[in-house]
Amino acid sequence: MSTRFVRGWTVVEFAIAVTLGLIVTLLASGLLLSAGSSYRNHDEYVGLNDGGRHALDILARSIRQGAYVNWDGKAAPIELDDAAPAPVAGLDARSISRGSADISGLLPAVAHGSDVLAFRFSGSGVGGNGDGSNLNCAGFGVAAPDAPDARGWSIFYVADDGAGETELRCKYRGAAGWGADAIVRGVDSFQVLYGLDTDVPADGVPNTYLNASGIDAMDAALALTGATADERLRDFRRKTFWKRVCSVRVALLLHGEGSTRADAGAAQYDLFGPAYSDAHGDDEGVRIVEASLPASQRARARRVVGMTVALRNRSG
Image (cartoon, rainbow, N blue to C red):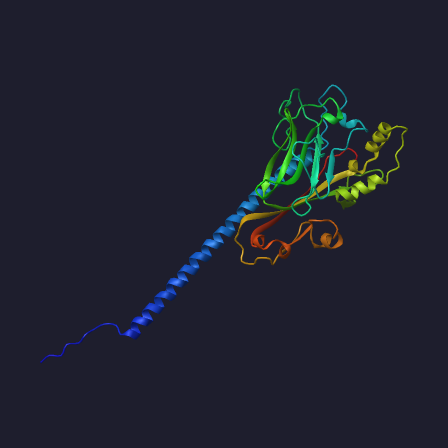
């Protein structure tokens, strides 16, 4: 009688095989999830870099455009009038309304005390949009002005988009009135410092950097002359320290849309560097501590972008 052997897995072998299979499956799933999370996080940073470059490009062109003098006209340029308003203006920790004139229509600040930055400049040509050679921050042409207050505007401020997201906007005066367009979404903070030339005579080199409140405080201490309010206004426009601004330093803290980071709440962002934040604790928004943000926002990708740009200014 022959002996027959039955070949197969024992219960122990089967249990070991199932366990090893589950381990391999879990490891593969973990790697897949990790790769997906890394991809989403990388994609968020790519978007932040692109948005930051776009915003800085528009800001840089507008800053360099400030105090542009058109020498091609038959009459003397408006900018040569000492009583013309300064080409640059700003507000600390404020926002403004979309349809109000220039930087009026003040509103409470959004996005951690974000600032307002404004430039006025002369255009070229006639008609509502001029000859198209000089453009405002929204890309619309600006005509040559016939009075100092008729110059073009490029104004930057942060506002809520109505859906709970903050965005940097460009406000401008068009042929049909005042309007504003979004430049970049996801703004945690927009901060501005002004390089002030305090030398007499001015040499065009900034001696110190101040925020808008600092320059306004210096203006408030000016001794003005004039028997009437109009005469004192003209004297103020001649003496204002805003006409001694020869460079502008801007910084933006941008955030992504989703929670893609693993180190949530561990970062601190100093928009102008730790030294400035330590020395100017009263300048709201220059330091953002992630742990102080709402828990739902702490794991977002974030990026600080900034630059310093020289401002063409005949007083500096």
